[in-house]
Length: 182
Image 1 (spheres, rainbow, N blue to C red):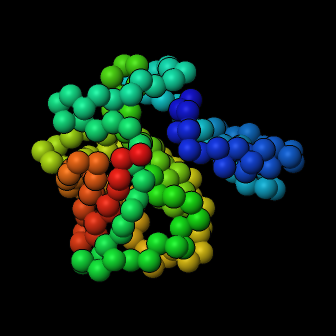
Image 2: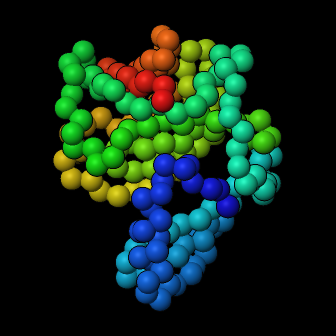
């Protein structure tokens, strides 16, 4: 099973609440669904490039910056739509990106969109970041963010990335997400 990025510790309480009541287990395709009166958790197998079940290492090794690859964690400092700075106080937690490589050398991206957690494998295509599949993440409704751009949608749209020193700008559909390396 795929492990969660370290910044998802807040989800531990929600998972514990899920198990505070009797849980029903069902299989939906290759995924397992656990449901109780307190919520739902879906688990999907990790696969390798051939689509076969793969083991996920206990930890990940940091990505190096060799070959232009990003590494480390980034936190959102500014969000702009068509050049106008947007108010981001509605986000309930920091908006973050975390770039790593697993033990097999696959580039992975995880983080938080200010409400939900997400993660997935990615690759570089020119100056764009392309997710190998749509990102996997939580799907909580977060009041006050419905008029803000979606980081997950931007990531799924093969955004353009530019770097300047410790600043990383992710651009997609007229929206610029400006991050600073932690």
